[in-house]
Image 1 (cartoon, rainbow, N blue to C red):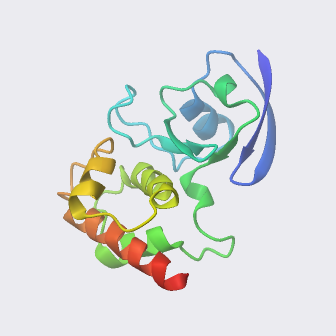
Image 2 (image 1 turned 30 degrees about the horizontal axis):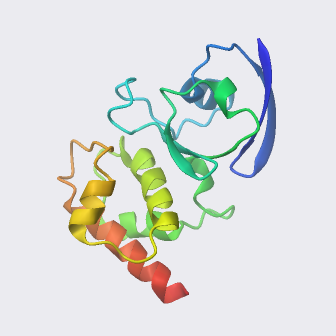
Length: 159
């Protein structure tokens, strides 16, 4: 067992964990943050994506002890405390960027990283390339890409 300290969605957390505990299991089972979905358990589908110090990480491939001292953001940390959706979530809602919703949390986190690192709106092909690590079986991706474009436009308008 090992003690770890992490900041999750802006809240400090101290926990004692088994050194073999997956980050996805730590988030879901230990902390009750069930928005992070576990799909393939091999890092392929992207459903378990979270941000660790601002970078996308497949939580099904990372150990909880590897994030000791880090800042994590999960899908639960995207909306405001009053429940107001952030720009990406709102764009997904308006563009109908989800169907079953299983992949949505991972996509939202990948898009969050993408929008923080891209200096300008991306083309549809660039968006497809950047989101290639997130698998969606329902939507055909058209509405997801529409939502990313809308989120970029709305974020530029807000500046």
